Each structure stands twice: as C-alpha cells, then as structure tokens.
Image (cartoon, rainbow, N blue to C red; front, side, top):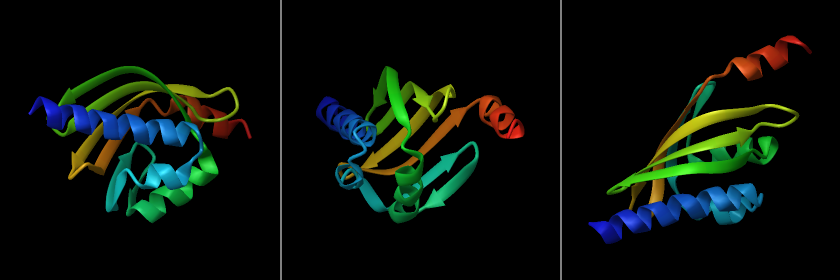
Length: 119
C-alpha cells in the first residue's frame, strides 16, 4: 500500500512540475484521456479540453503541502494566475493505474472576480 501511495504522489508531483515548466506534452502523459476536472469557475471533461485551457492560462504552482492516502493525493499550493493575482488553493487528485483520472480544485475566487470587475 505504501508503494502505491508513493507512486500516486510521484505521478501528481511530476504532473505539477511539468505544468510549471509549461511542458504540456509531458504533463499530458500523467493523465487519463477521460480526465475529469472540477474547479471553482468551471469543469472540463477530457484531457484535451483541460490542456487546451492550461496552454492559454500557463498557471504556476508553488507547492506548500502534500497529503497522500492510497491513490488519493491532496496538494495545498499558491497558484499564480497571471498579473499580480495569486490564490491559495487545494487540489484533490485521484490516481488510477498510475495516471490522474480526476481532480478537484477549490479556492476563494474573489481576487479573480474583483480583478475582472476593474477591466
């Protein structure tokens, strides 16, 4: 069980590192085709839809804490969303067969919404 947990944690961290490096092809290798993403501001069904957005947004993750339980991995991180906007968030990643099958991210969206009101 510890080996499975370590592998899941390694998969998620490799995914995050590839996103930070804007190496979307490498990041794509860590997720299932049928990836399900649920976030505060929307959802994405399928890896292609998710990565189409990520290539535009180019978010940066500053990892603060990792918690793993079997094939569930939870990360706490600051996400730089461009400009001066950084939000503290938590992501719950579920790994199946050494690839991320789904994840949910929660954060307080007010800094993003307030920034869009000023434009």
